[in-house]
Length: 269
Image 1: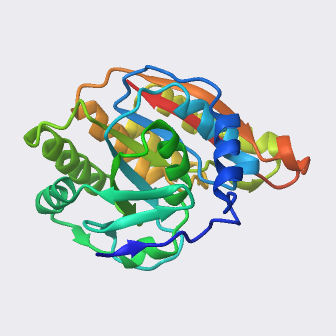
Image 2 (image 1 turned 30 degrees about the vertical axis):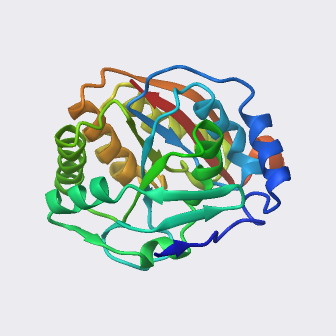
């Protein structure tokens, strides 16, 4: 069995299990019951964005299956990389991949490939797992890493994911998490301005508008492809609205207002 070891423990988040659990509990003081079909969470080091991710995970009802979509920061692997077997380890425990669902998605998405290379050193999905562990330590995951693809590819992936969930009767048990940060290394005021353009499309549940807005305004939102895909997929599953939970920039912690990264958390229901 493939065991995907932690790549950023001790760097993006604590490697000591007790320290990590205590930090997660600080970020998730409440247990929510919103039956969300999707969510948007950041993936920076916890000191910067953990409170945003925690605000999202604190509000949503625990699920048994988490489909995790994130951008490819490493360049390794295929364009649409689905890890379809094995386990992911974090300091708190291990998550099994839901093989049946992962393989069904691969069967339905012509451009998707079985791939582990894109996942080995990629941080954007790994940093979600301690929060998910707090919600449901026995949950299963389907890790999907996406490179830059066009909007029709996003729609194809969304159709494949939503169709697979429906065919396997797993819609009620599942949630699709899009892992993304917002604009990168802009002055704080400008970052907030351009991020608000993307946030408005997200709030209006407009994946097509988000795709075009990010490209036309050259917004450095690293996970906009996963986010567009997640929004299309949840819409196909019957979601009606998006709630923006929190937005901030790294300047809140670093006090460096010259080069910031934006972080947004949202829930789709």
